[in-house]
Amino acid sequence: MPVTRISEELLLDIAEQCDRKTIANLMQANKATYALISSHQRSISIAKLHNFPTLHQTHILTSNNEKRVPVPDKQSLAAIKELELRELRMTSLLDRGGFLLTNDTETLGLSSASLEKFKDGLRRAMYLADRLADTIAEPEITHTRDVLSDRLASLQLDHNAGPISDEDLAALRDAEYQAHVELTKALRGKQRGIIHDLTDLDLALLLTLCEAAVTGWQRYMARNASVDVRFYSKMEAFGELVLREGASFTIWAFVRGTGSLLAHINRAIGSVAEEMWWRGVGFIQDGDEGLCSAVLEELRERFLELRSTDESDLEDDDEAEQLDADELMLVKQWAHELVAEAIGCDAWKGYCAGGVSLSP
Image (cartoon, rainbow, N blue to C red):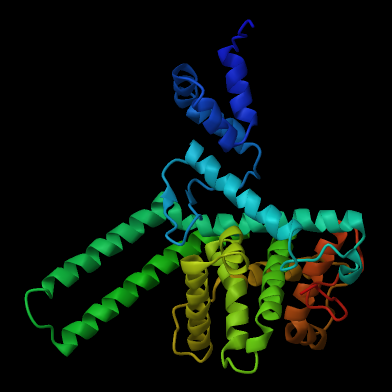
């Protein structure tokens, strides 16, 4: 039987369209194919990036385990592998499980068409959450972290010569805390910049994703509500963690994770819950209210700007004071209306609205 040779151009076209597993099989076919794909890795990766939402992050984190290291080059097959892994996890969470939603359209009050649009919106929000988490891999942030790490290492070396006094130990602990504050400040600044540039609908979808995560966690962990004194703090912490560490990592680790991955995410939930509790009682005053608060604050500013230019603008101080008292509720209501319009379902009022029932 005659052997048909495939041109290099056709092979590259195939590589640009198929998944990474198929690319790996192609590269194992023969040395020439391996060399061809290896030499065109960057152009193949750039072409495949068009299959994912354009979110403009420069670098990404791995999420196959809890170590989460930066992928050095976004335009590489390693980056494509990570993005494909995230896509598979999102599809699994949205199509095969009731943590974020249920396929029973009656309980969500959505038509089949609206449900598909709603899933698309949640998927978009999950990509946005992953983008926020990936910010820590950006060169500017990694440089800040390296500088702070070197500073701490120098201080620790100074104290390794002999016994350390209580005063020096306290100074070292204070330096570690200040380094953490500086790094967090730099990171949150970048993340707030991303949030500020999002559309109204993207912000509303992020809020909806956080509500979905919080509602799902509460339902899954309901058995602990009466015995865990920080149950509700952990519930809110899970929503915050979705934005800090990414949706495809955090939600997947909690719902599908096992062993060290599940243990990592549960420790992270407890740590963020404790942080939020101490901040709530005024013990921590570093100005970092978290990413959920940043999303809500951005939505609030957009809402107030919209109200100020509306024809039915507030006419007196009493009415303005009433808006201040109820503005959080009104902001969330406005966000839910944006989502309702996008999915074509006026009845959608958010996960936390009365009468909405989700499958266990």
